[in-house]
Image 1 (cartoon, rainbow, N blue to C red):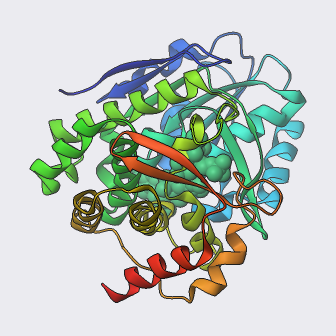
Image 2 (cartoon, rainbow, N blue to C red):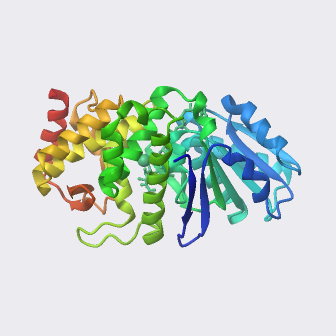
Length: 361
Ligand SMILES: NC(=O)c1ccc[n+]([C@@H]2O[C@H](COP(=O)([O-])OP(=O)(O)OC[C@H]3O[C@@H](n4cnc5c(N)ncnc54)[C@H](O)[C@@H]3O)[C@@H](O)[C@H]2O)c1
Ligand SMILES: O=C(O)C(=O)C[C@@H](O)[C@H](O)[C@H](O)COP(=O)(O)O
Ligand SMILES: [Zn+2]
């Protein structure tokens, strides 16, 4: 399998996510009525941004932004708004986000907020961007206080996942994106876990058929989940909607904040999933083999399974998680593979002990 198209039928959809080598060639057909196009990209991907500019037959404003989480700040957001104002962007114009998940989160929010919403086209260039961040309409920025605290649900008109763009990505970035793929396997698609178990090295090869199938499967999981619960509002009792995609993220986001946003998102949620597997074993009866499978797959992909800080320093940060309600912590746990569930007000000693177990491995 070398690629394919997944349709996202969300509340603001429908739109297509095109996965494959050469997917970027579709871009000129997706410009619609735009009089102008802004290309928001990390400065380090300037050559790619200029390649996109050359594909556009109308005025283009290139907006370079910092790399990684440094892009997701109020200051950078303001800089993007000012660039659109200077170039006279109007309601029919288009923002194109070209970059990893940090860039597409930022660019999507620029599009969502400029004139209360203009067209947005997403060109993710990292594994994580393709399998998760660019799909499903969560856009936004971080604050000093924590991850993704300001943003909007705002869908793109299309997502172009050109697998050839991944050739220049570091191995650690590939692994970071695969953490979200493994997450999709645990919450909704056991075939992902089988594909990964069969050949972990092949999973990390962005030119392999196995890799392309993993991307498509993860995008399909995300499309199904957001179609059923776009604004993350249908979890009832221990039944879980879009919040399932947050498996491993309560601790993961706390680690990112604690590390001053120097840890990659995928690395942080890897620790978060290893932790949640243990919490789920202790509180939801998840079997030991599935806990082991977390360690085997995540560790085997080169992802971390522990974080070097006392749990007491991470726990207060977790209270700012979007799933929390008032003083009550709500986690996404798992009863078995494919059966995520909401875990409300989990006993604190269990949380601390599970974290200690990771350090002792
Ligand atoms: N909106 C969502 O639903 C959603 C989902 C998952 C993650 N996220 C967010 O996504 C972000 C993480 O995304 P990420 O892991 O892509 O990080 P990133 O955007 O920081 O990209 C990782 C690094 O790879 C570089 N890079 C990107 N594409 C490249 C390429 N083709 N060649 C060489 N280098 C390249 C980037 O410049 C950066 O240095 C986090 O902020 C996370 O919170 C959002
Ligand atoms: O799309 C979703 O919903 C997710 O939760 C996907 C996550 O992988 C992603 O990291 C997302 O940005 C987390 O969002 P947040 O609402 O917890 O900030
Ligand atoms: Zn994530």
